[in-house]
Length: 375
Ligand SMILES: Nc1ncnc2c1ncn2[C@@H]1O[C@H](COP(=O)(O)OP(=O)(O)O)[C@@H](O)[C@H]1O
Ligand SMILES: [Mg+2]
Image 1 (cartoon, helix red, strand yellow):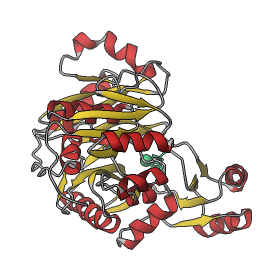
Image 2 (image 1 turned 60 degrees about the vertical axis):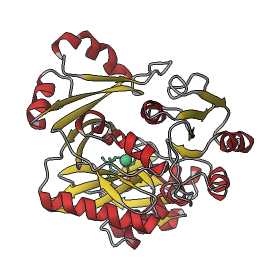
Image 3 (image 1 turned 90 degrees about the vertical axis):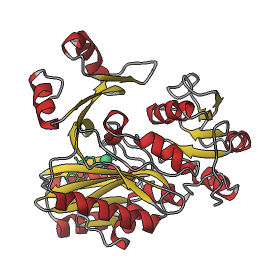
Image 4 (image 1 turned 30 degrees about the vertical axis):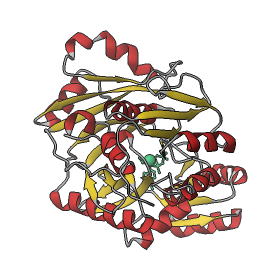
C-alpha cells in the first residue's frame, strides 16, 4: 500500500451508511474531503451528510467497482463487508485497512485465533461443528458457559447462555442454523472495558483512554471514560491492543472489548472500525476516533491523543429518545448526537449523548439519579 497523502478534495468511499459512517463523514467534510457512501437504503444516516450515495447492496460487486472508480480511498463502517468486494478494493490499492482485518473479525474462530496468536488471554473456549462436539465441549468447559455463532452475531444476537443441560437444546438449534459455534466459559467479570486505538499505515499507534462499558440487554448502554481501573490494567489493555493490531495488520481505528477480573484482563471481541464505546472521544479528546481514522486511511500523521477530562456517554435507543428530550432543560451539559434514522424502534440505536467533566463518577451518579442511566 502506497503511503501518499490524500489531501482535501480527494474522495473517501464508505461501505455502509449507518451512524458510524455518518460520524466519519462529518469529520471528513470539515477536513475538506468528498464522501461517497454505498448503502441500500436511500437517505441513510451517512447519505444525509455525504456528497453522494450509491444505492445498492453491500455485496453488489458492480456497485463496489463503481465506488472504487469514484473514490481515492475506501473504508467501511461495519465488519460484515463482502470479502470478495474487500479483496477487489485491496487489489486496486484503495483499501488501506486491507481485507484481513475484516476476514478475522467476521469470524469468532479466526478472531480467537488472532488473540491467542498474539499471546493474549481469553476465556476457555472450543469450536464445535456437531451435537457430539457440542456436548463434549460443554462438559469440559462447564457451566455457566455461552454458545455463540461464529459468524453474524451482534448486540447479543446469536448467543445462548448455558446454565444447565437443558440449555444445550437451544445451542443445538442454533448449530443447525450455523455451521460452527464457539462455546466459551462464562466470565464472572468485575467490569467490561474497551480500548479504541488507531494504527497508521506505517504502524504507529495512538490510543484513546480506556473506556468502561455498561451493557443492558446485551446492548451498550453507557460508557465511562477513563475507565475506573488501575494503571496496570490500562497498560495491559494497550499492550494487548498493540500485539493484536500487529498480528492482524490493523490500519485505521479499531476497538477491542475486554473483561476485567481483578488485576487481569481477558480479551472478548474485536471490531475493525470506530466503536460505540469510542464516541466519547468526540468531545473528550483533542481528536476523535473518527478524525483519527480518516487521518490514518488518508495517510496523514496521527494527532497525539490528549483527553480534556472525564466523560460519560449514554446511548439513546428508540425507547429512550422521548424521555431524554422531555428533560433536556435539566441537562444543558448534554452534547446531542442524533443519527437521522427514519424509523424509531424501541431497541434501535437512534443517537447518543455525551457529558464532559473532571470527574466521570460524579457525572455518572447524577445521571443514575436522573434515571438517564439505568442502574
Ligand atoms: N464469555 C462471556 N462471559 C461473560 N459475559 C459474556 C461472555 N461473552 C459475552 N458476554 C456478554 O455478552 C455481551 C455481548 O457479547 P459479545 O461477545 O461482545 O458479542 P456481540 O457484542 O457481538 O453481541 C458482552 O459484552 C458481555 O456482556
Ligand atoms: Mg461485543
